[in-house]
Image (cartoon, rainbow, N blue to C red; front, side, top):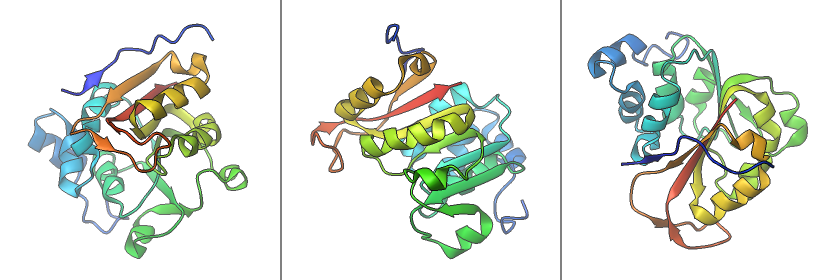
Length: 212
């Protein structure tokens, strides 16, 4: 089972999308309200289900009202389509350094920019839920956090943190007050060697959900 930690004790310091996305009602009915995130992630081939993020999202977000979402890291858009199925009537945008799928760019608003570009970030508004699934190096994740955490109104999620070394670096650099309401998630699946980490070692992926 993936491990959910209640809190980190860190001390003081639709139609517009081509009509191909099933409705939330369809997904929820097929699941009998068990986990709409897993159903949608599996349906669209998003690896978030492989890592087990559906458990984290189902526990903390399923009952919350989400009106807008920004996912950093679009790639082929599998998770964007899944989120659109879960929340068919909300604003869902994304960001990537390249547009990998022209149809996806027609179905969703995708900002073509780096998540660490300060000037470009200044033009991006607020969202209820911001997910960083872009560059997985901890330094890029922290730089992205500094720019986009203030724009998250309810939740800020860092996905696919590469091992304990990278997690420790992030926790050291993020304000401890911010982390008091954070949820640490140990991803499912076998340990792996992270080639994008400064500390190449076989380890787990981690996710960090910050509740505002």
